[in-house]
Image (cartoon, rainbow, N blue to C red; front, side, top):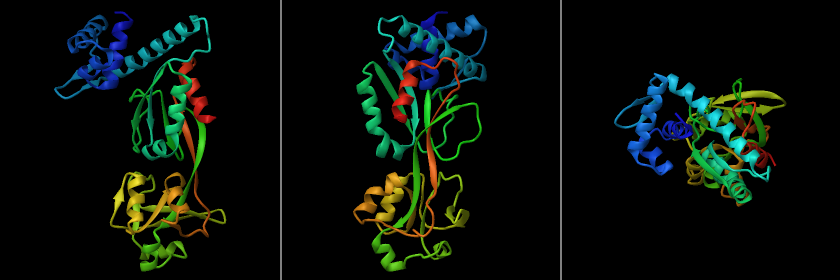
Length: 289
């Protein structure tokens, strides 16, 4: 086996396809398949399960994939260190980012990063769902809210406030809630990815208040919730980075402003590694700046 075999195996796992991996590497599909088969023969281990639709790593394959990432990362760092300019940041990063936060906030930072470091490449997986950083082969993910205990490292890059709001037309027709109990008489636009389900969480005088709400619409995307609210379908509980513009121009109006806003940390999460790749270190610093 050689480095080419390792890089091919990593590409196959990350792309979940021999065809897609071949396109990424610029070789024939048969070459990718042969290299992985040779790797399995050398190791006397089944690394991937092959189906007609996808390629799924076995548990041994996942463990070997992580080892390959470490080896290739160390090799890349060694190559960079050997260059005359030790400050050069280069390489590819695979990132998982929340859809709305990426589009509303992060996009300019991503563009400025590759402009600052022209030898870098970013592969973005935009999703509002929880993804597993390790098994997904991500170098880093951005997450909003409280994180479960883990061996992963985090770096805070911002904060998010939740704002309860609705369109003026909806409030004119249905009235404005003065208290969280009034939400029982309103259509509420639910966020299906919320860890609290149909419960909205508020704070008042340092006391947490949980209120179960109901509504005809539930969506897993904040921008779609905002569109529903703009069209007068109900009250919505939105992150400030989604609601900000509509609140400023009066398309949405804040309600229940007599309650303290819920504030959540926004963090970049990355694996615990003794020798972090220079490109990942530079990216984290760029986001935290």
